[in-house]
View 1 (cartoon, rainbow over the protein chains, first blue to last red):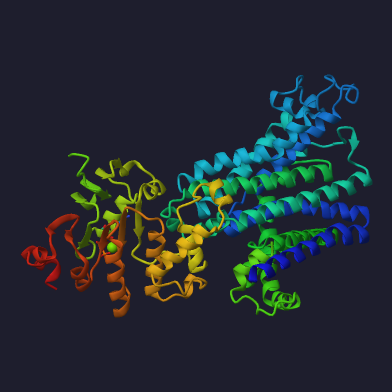
View 2 (view 1 turned 90 degrees about the vertical axis):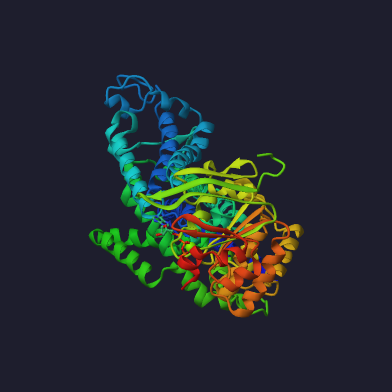
Length: 376
Length: 248
Ligand SMILES: Nc1ncnc2c1ncn2[C@@H]1O[C@H](COP(=O)(O)OP(=O)(O)OP(=O)(O)O)[C@@H](O)[C@H]1O
Ligand SMILES: [Mg+2]
């Protein structure tokens, strides 16, 4: 009975989301603004991963930019190779390699660039490379029982190391400018308005797939184990579960999500640079998640959109204020509204909607967790 | 020793030292199939530490713990659980945010791997087993309640149920009746008597009345060593025990 209501609610919420993203926004926004929304949505992938990793399992990663960036770079490498045909680069001293390599006196394509000639490989790498790094970090940290603040700090350190590495290895990575001037995907020009519209819809479709995946995990026993781990790690261990491998799993899952987001970012924005990898973007991603409500999948999608929209409006009018506004927002959320926007919804809207959906049963008493699932 | 009558658990020369302080010192004892052994002793005697060592929470400095022929000191916590050792903590350790049903379901020994837990389904076998255990621990009418809302005694039972559903060959209980009302205590004693018909149990308890009611074998621990061991009658009349523990 209750679960039927919950299913109906979930379906309704997803429908509303799809209506907003796929119908209303494309109708009312000009292409430039819609492309911005598409860009914002790529951060929502990261936020979805954080719901499971941070919201459910309690593992705070302040380094999701690492995975977002890696996914974005994998896509950018493919696109860059496409844009660096010998004909297009014939004025270089070594034609056929990316321009920044040529500027840095590199004469052959490095080995790790070679596989990115293949689209199939690149698509797999978008999720696999972040997952692999997350697997290494996860195994080495969680098996040693590193958690909480220490883990958060280590992820930050890795984010900043990766940034330094990318900037320092200019010849291989494009340095501080990143990988720019991306043009076509298998001959399809990604810079046109039409292509951007299509990429926008692809982003929505992928986001829905990821949402479904995350929802499936949360509804499974694995989802309950994640929450149980956050509350009583020892009990989970002494119920016969290998806590470290569950943590590693959810961390890898979040990394893969972030990687997919990063790749869609590259495709829509047309470049990838180290400024999306470091500490600041990583923390911002956590803020999107906190604002939306870190235990609500749909909540964080709206949270991401809202914060990014505010950010754009701010930086268009008074850019210097933005960092402070963001900081203030975070403090406000943490102190006043730890459940984020989703908790506002749960208190004020959910009882009303439950009634509207026809069931005479009263709103669930422990709205918190029930609504977690209802919300996606 | 012959495998035929080898005890279920044998602890030999077990020592753990925390920065030079030997909380458990050259301890040896064994538990047979179907035996209920009670460990008593003054505060800080090392009782909880002994359980921590057996279940892998604390690593032994030296010594051996053999369970069904496997050396436990080398295994990880979850491997020890899977080998058949269940542990109840001194303070009720349950998932407050989940319902009684979900608490028991998570403890159900199926789908403990990543894939397994992803495809785990709440089938009739699970539901039946959860109901069965819930009846045993007097919580069959509380299945939909959040664990947080249970009374202290009920929480203790729930944790006991979470162990029972794993069906361990050895059950280790750290002060299972602490904080219980008199009637809850009586029910728990009956419950334990029922439980030990099919498994071995180690109980740590301060409540002497309760100990007398349930114990087969009593081990008195003092400063990490065994002070006295034997039947309750024997232990109670041991002058050293009276001096350090029962006297006050
Ligand atoms: N991880 C640890 N590090 C340092 N000292 C410890 C640790 N664990 C236990 N001890 C010490 O070992 C001694 C034995 O502790 P233990 O908890 O086993 O006692 P106990 O017999 O269970 O006492 P109680 O009846 O109060 O529960 C105590 O002095 C305690 O301070
Ligand atoms: Mg103790």
